[in-house]
Length: 239
Image (cartoon, rainbow, N blue to C red; front, side):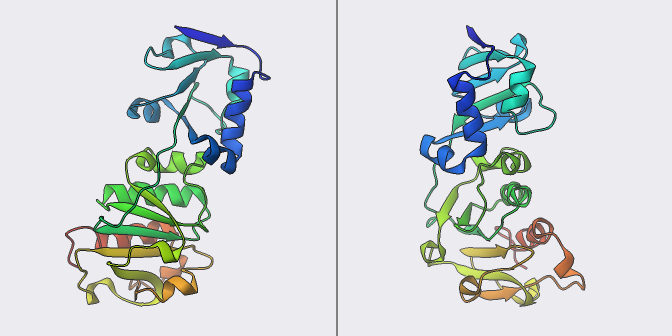
């Protein structure tokens, strides 16, 4: 069974718009909006599905058929695939028991943050700790860049004092040493900062500085540089 909504003034439509645009509201409601056939198919639990084509209606969740005009209003992409869903926000976790943790410090570009989550999952990192100065991982652009990784890799959030204390820490820094000079322990943590500011001074004090031994390191996008470092320090990897 499905419902139909033809008015953009419907309260559920307004709810979706607010989830898309208001970070505090997302966290209060503990709900996230995802878009696109592939991501929706990969998630096991949907709360509400919005479609423009009745053939996309599903029986395992509340399904609502809307007009293309309403889909355009609630979508965060220029060209919608005609499917959008509200899903439960995955809870933040404790990462104390995880061996390999990526720490993101001041990553404010949602596309970069999402790409880093996807790369961490691909290389077998066991969790990602988001410092409070990062953008929201449940922002629409971050979710699209992560391609589902946001729901598959454990996430934690807090300040630098909340970081696990039992890990060997590596800090990405232009003045660091090459990765091969280190012998990482089983429990390791890699801290990445933004392109503009780098890792914050308080986090720089937490561990050994590492850099990529290439002349144009400073011109690399953080998602690219971070991906290389994650590969070099990935689980079971001896640099």
